[in-house]
Length: 75
Image (cartoon, rainbow, N blue to C red):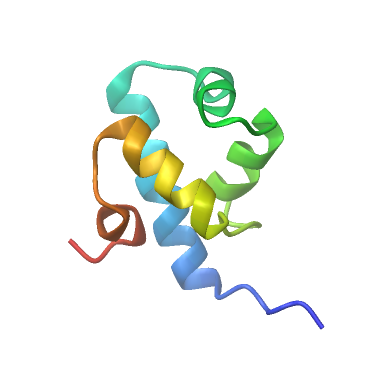
């Protein structure tokens, strides 16, 4: 059985990713292309309906030059 998504945690991750995209001036499609996923995955992470995999989280953090803890909302 798939793990249930914690809506609060998912929203924090989505908000952080949305903020990073807005502040960097790139599109969701550009981010998706850079980290090797479909743009719909980025949209689902932002809207809180999907958690990023650990690997994707690392790729996103590297792309935006932030820590994974920042994306998780811990810093």
